[in-house]
Length: 213
Image (cartoon, rainbow, N blue to C red; front, side, top):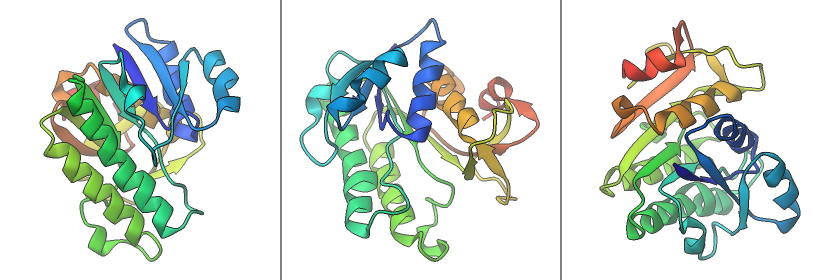
């Protein structure tokens, strides 16, 4: 697949590019905000395209047949930026994908996005934005997968996860590298089509966990 990674310069986005580079099935296109990030993207094996989620970025979706949305406003940005990126930017990406007949859309969401009213203090706006974006994707008619990881770490990949529509014990965490693997493997794992699920480190291989969704 020709895969556009939105949020390619983020921590998880860069790991997604590495996974795509190591796959013989995919070619990566990296959407970035600044031209000075171009060299890094090329070194990660991707073709960069400079575009801004807060502007018209429909041209970034030319000549691709899958999208991985891994962008995030970050914990230090204000409410306006969170809504602009995590909600409205994501919704625009969905709309552009639909307009262009793109076959596959993988959304990196967050555990808790299904119940933003129960968000921990300081997370209300973020989880509500994720909820709105997820609903927009589910209603779009696209072949979607929505992945909701728990707390993210920078630990080395474990390669073993739990993946369920709703994980009862949400207190664990998961390395970003494993999240990236899940996003990329979901592209071609048909069992994840039209599914929303949570992930944490667990006991099953990523392949087994995704096929058991």
